Length: 191
Image 1: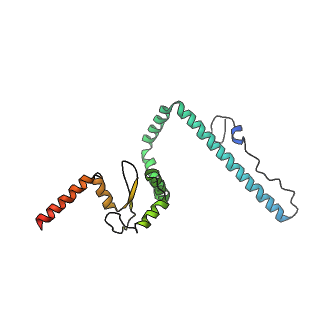
Image 2: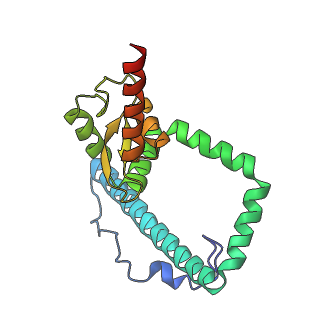
């Protein structure tokens, strides 16, 4: 039993293949050498603990993957019950995290949903002069990423109104042309 992560398994796993990090230091003769040797010992000890910790995390991850693969329904049900019992706390924690880390949240969202990085987004903003690709107005708020829902390919950056407008017309060209004809007809007849 490993007492670090409370997981059954050999503790030999944690120290297997870890090269000694302690650099042999000669007996220090002066006060400054004693301070330096103590510092090197601490640095090496911290590095050793970090590597052992990483090995323990990897072992725990592999152990959980193995257990999950044996019976995924049990773990899904456990998580479903846990989430149902702690829904408010989980939602509150998520909201707090997003408020505390807006840039990280945005970065993960852009990468997961659109396949672009923050740098890609900033380049698109620069290329469009911080203006909507449809109406050409400069947006005071952050421009929204417009993408094809079928292919997932990013088309450009739009203001909120234009992005919602495309969504309301189901991104269908015939619907948009029909709306244009409708507006032209009433503009001509009411003029």
